[in-house]
Length: 276
Image (tube, rainbow, N blue to C red; front, side):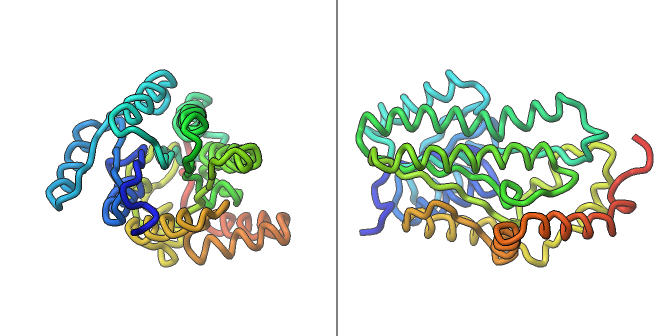
């Protein structure tokens, strides 16, 4: 009997990308999965695909920026399933563009989803898990929560926040029976690069300059995440490339900033449009 067998797992941002891959992997490992996403039609289609494979998946549409809606979703999940073993706070968006070109509203949208969405899920799941005496919170950050990347500074800010939130909570929760993990994937093959808003950026040139030769599929990413969660790891850094950047950053943060800056200096003229 595996770690996830018959366990109840809620996944946000589950209609596509890493969220869908996590839903699929957890189903395969025997979990009772509740998929959540703001894109209701896509969510139902994704769930139907899993149900057609013989899995029993429940869907609960959700806008993670709505605090009370998130609480209601958690309460409903527990009411229907009787418990909450795992929550994977995965929903996220990005805006590409240099700080000088982006508006405050761009920042607000990213922080509302990527940081406050995770805060909402963490707070309500944590309180519910404390009442039942067990549970595991898994917050999906990014290598950009450990490494300063240009052209996505609002995203970097949100993911650094998720890393800090998760690490701080882990200290509080460790003696109370609740496990907490943060996941920092490197480059993963999802549609976020093609669908995210960009400001004064040549999307195609940006995509050409991303190190996607170091990327892995969303399915492989989900497998590695679940393996890390099984081991109750505090940090789950996914892809070798991400682990190298993380190591450099721990040894010499200044060196990492210099390396990233040097790389961006080579591509800036190709990536950033000359006029806003």
